[in-house]
Length: 115
Length: 114
View (tube, helix red, strand yellow):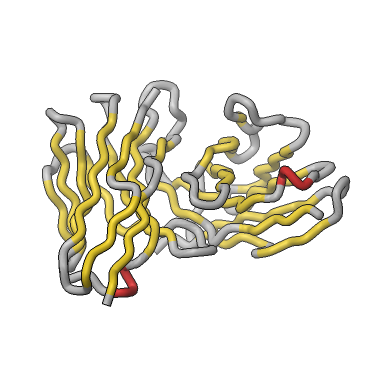
């Protein structure tokens, strides 16, 4: 099946620092990648959609300058949380889409803790 | 946009019993309905999906049914096992201007008790 990896799986950082999360599709080329945020015992909240070589599309209420997304190739997208604060602590999950029919395959997630 | 409702929020069953989780959607143009299983601390895993040209799909102990007229779809797990314990999410695509986005249900915490 389609495999998506994320790195790192867990990160702890100090308030004010920036953190980069990588998302890779390992065995397929993803036309679109998605970034989600999930708080404990809640559903997935879409943050942004990115297509290779173009600017990401952010959901309403998501700060573009705080959550920087780069989609450099069909197999790699990165999310950078800039000037992280404790309220940014969450579980960040990426997914990769393979077709226009809506299929998405998720990475294992990244647990971010901002002290 | 698409609105997806999921019930129940929690479900406890005895090992060997069946479990059913139901979802409704609002956009009649939606044509793809996946189900994801998420274990604690992990990313969601696609377990089964159905497209709008069929009414039922089965994969071993898991099945999904779709009623397009009523705009609802259900996940059925038979002969439940402890390893089926997880949070299950349904989803439906945002068809109009969605760019392949999915709208997720609120999730169902399934607990299979011994």
